[in-house]
Image 1 (cartoon, rainbow over the protein chains, first blue to last red):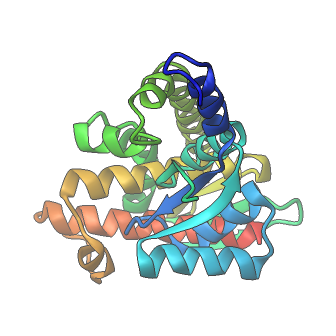
Image 2: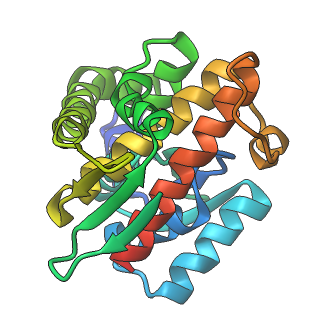
Image 3: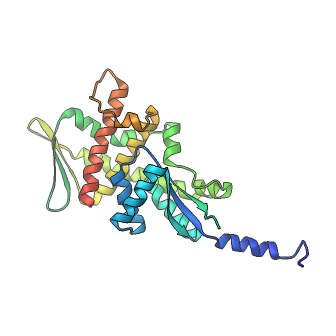
Length: 95
Length: 157
């Protein structure tokens, strides 16, 4: 049994950092569907079909998880999406 | 107004009436809105994590601000190059400026929508420009910028 001041908590924190993060794009009534599709293709290299699938999911469901992975890369993707003025956030992926 | 793609991939906009040229000149002005709702939309929080939001404001948002300003300056310079021809004006949007135009047009549309509090139904409305009606003018401007944006997107497809 580890004592209360054992380093296990640190180990959990480190594991938390490695946990996957979702890049989420939220619906916006202003952005054109064609523009959103173009940006998805550019930023993630999606095929047209995949980009349109995510664009429609954003439009119909209000949000779409467009990428999941390490936090650093997720932050970079959110920055790229925001540079194109898409409403993008990141969140911890559900275990 | 007539639009055509050149062999070099530029977008040539011809026979622009003075009224629409003024709206085109307004793109960087509208895009540079400092209305609180527009600014909040340009720079959304990336997360509910306070530490990340703080870092984002310190390191990422200044970069975004610089990028948005550069887009607006590119558009402003291109519009300064509009020439009077016959009864209208013509304007060339170079292929390598199309991203800046897409960005500035998008920013202008977002600003107009935020300033006017427009929702999806308002934006879908078919309006005619009426100088006596600020709402109709704003919605017309939003639609016109959307049309230009759509043309640029299609050229990149």
